[in-house]
Length: 274
Image (cartoon, rainbow, N blue to C red):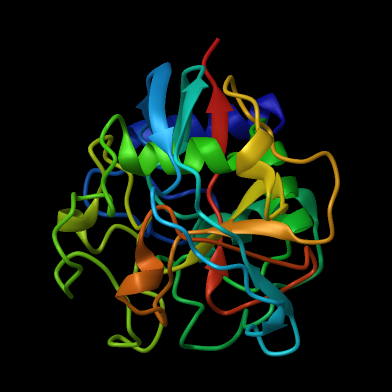
């Protein structure tokens, strides 16, 4: 991101003013996109993955014509990460519009003009993996790794969901097609993680940095794992507004082609702590 753009965003955020496009802030009261966008995840270890086994499924058609694969969640294994910050909320329609207006990027996300998906405070959908990464780089950041994403939800506790092990319900997340579309970001405060990260279960599934390999957990490094060096599918983490309770667990993994543009798929960004 250019310094002038960043500083302008910070000043407007501190003043409680909207960005210079005349659109009011879409975030919950008191939330400033520039100042309070991210949560700090401290350095340290946690248990990643699941202690139960899941059989590997063949790729099947899930996201319309997109190829989709469920990867195993086992074995559970220790991961050690450096400190980082992560977006508390999924990137919104308005925030992505600011990116397009500022950079001149012309390719509209799929569903951009669909009234079920284009409210300013809804998370943006219809974004490819490359576009998600480009947005994060515009902010001098990047997509999270699988390991970073999962730690933001689990912390040091091997919990099933960001809030703990209690079964999901409609007060904690948007799932099971109960709402029928993505909810405004931060709508389910009871479902946030210990670090204050929202919508890691439900609302949208999210792009992460890693390529998909169904056997990667068997040989991934313990320290700051980055995922395989190459692959055919990019990993997606987190359940979405159409998923059932089984698929909104923090250890749930799936993947699709990097060019996929789904109404159930969004993203958030991370930054290293220097």
